[in-house]
Image (tube, rainbow, N blue to C red; front, side, top):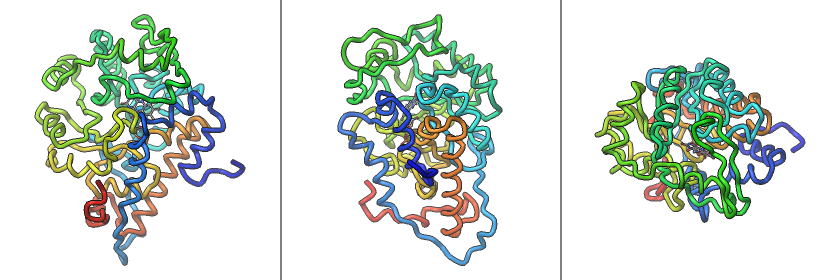
Length: 362
Ligand code: FNR
């Protein structure tokens, strides 16, 4: 691409130019037919806006709070794995960009930089995303390291008892490096002659026996941090999450990488919110590529959104600066959307600012 990217999607093209095919496919891909991957983005296009005019929009305030932490805009960084495959500085660069953007970064359990390296590299508010290993002692140890290093919440990802079937990774025989967090504890490099190394790793190592009754109680016994669950798509699970005492919910289908033919996340957001009834904050991710997408998710009730792939594309294209630009683009677009919709602050964005065309959203 000759010229500077003018939107987040154009960063994807830059990423494609610089990344080895195996890694580009890993970052972009979804599960199986990738129906949900397309839907996550397409469903936003079926929502239109209902702007109000002649509202004073000379000052737009995008700031909001999440679990009491003030951020400059309701756009956070989703946990995504192995940033050093995109850029040598990896999660440290992403965290610095989060700090510069004054937002929250959720560090992935499968990060390539350690919990400590990321913590000491910047003063961004950080949450820590957790998978639970069969070896619970290893997971407990890393949660405690996160707590000790100033991470403010644990985001337990609940949609991955197994790895979704990502066919590009299988074809490419995707391999993963030894993750430094686990050095001396467990090998993340597995021999695998067929298919994707990651799939074999998850099967061997992740605890696929986790249940509502057990895992939240266990987590509460090892940490004082608030616990969010990420990967809720139904009112049934939203109610259970509130019942077991989580501090927040992330509506997510894992960026369509786990179970294909789940609906677009934006189409289930209201179902989850109704079940939660305001008892805990509800965050949202999946398919956010424009400020208008952020606006739509807020109008449908999300407290803030998380952004996954676009951050990686920015990182691959230009390290910390690339991530900063991606975050700035989304923020600038949200700011403009708020101005043109007659919403000077985040609390002015309401359900009546979007039109979901009866029945078509689902
Ligand atoms: C992810 N996601 C993810 N989620 C999680 O809880 N732990 C993880 O380690 C990862 N790793 C990961 C890697 C890659 C390459 C992607 C694309 C995604 C899911 C992520 O947190 C988020 O739910 C989605 O990325 C949101 O969708 P978008 O913004 O990518 O469309």
